[in-house]
Length: 451
Image 1 (tube, rainbow, N blue to C red):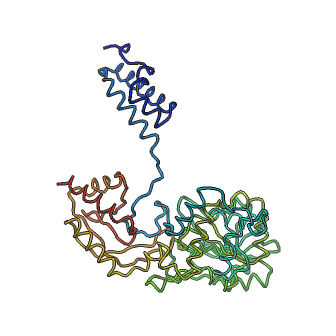
Image 2: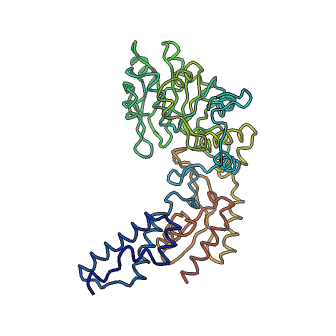
């Protein structure tokens, strides 16, 4: 067979399959898929391969179309036991937040419209009052993530001015985000204070100069320094700042509004504590321990928040309607004392061991296979480093755990597991109740293939 035997693009476009693809995928993608398939076939034939059938050419074209049009951002079942899983979208939203998102996304909304006055409103109105009530702060501002919040504060308050920070707090979080890099981008001048393991209040006092623009404390959100260590408290830095007329900022990161110690975890500093200690401005995330959407939240003194609000950068990093909707509903759960029941990460954290054990037992009975194993869940998301929660997990002693886990990831509803020893392990703590049946169905299907 020669290259001339290859059907043309036009010939394949006239087949019933291609006509259906044009209706489903559009003409331009269909033409592109067929053309690329023919080009690849032409090259392979020049290398000695035989002429494929028309059916084979159409099949290869169809595969290309499916790959090109499959969403890469997809829902998954998180069975890893990592509650705030950064790679899996961090905190899942509450049912009420998801419903509100659907309603707001379906049409027009009151993003910047005041219904009472019948005039233009401000998007800040949707969350600011509730953030003030929950934190005790004078004012609040929402931006698109905590990195943006820190960048805005440094730019607006300390551009071309020295910013004092303990050397032990020059942190890097996931994705290579580093405090020193953000400072450089903001135009602030980084002034490292103290040593890696020990920083005293006197080190800050000695570093203050006439042009010092800000004192910054960054929470150790994803690591611990132990042993011969010391750092001045936030309240001590606030007193120092007041004596010298320098604002103090707390980059809190995790955004806890509840005390994690009540659930057997270490105490994570809360937003309310930072405000009570007198911080002029506090920055934290919306999608970590707050349990809401990705957002950067700034709370603090009204004069400072107003200054940030008016800065040109604030518009570039402002949140959209979907972020504000989900955040508002999440805050409402806290206001109504419903966080433990409504916000997924909090009922995951607070779920008793006996309930987890019952879920695993039910899974084993349904599957007719597997073992119950005592284990540990982690909070994750750069919060509470090395802190774990006791749990019960389902352990599947399959022949090829890596292949089994890979097949689960590649299923219609991907399941993310962990492997310990020669077992595939699934933690019920992070499996949402509405996902349980899909999880069991996928496990049954895969176990049948193993036999």
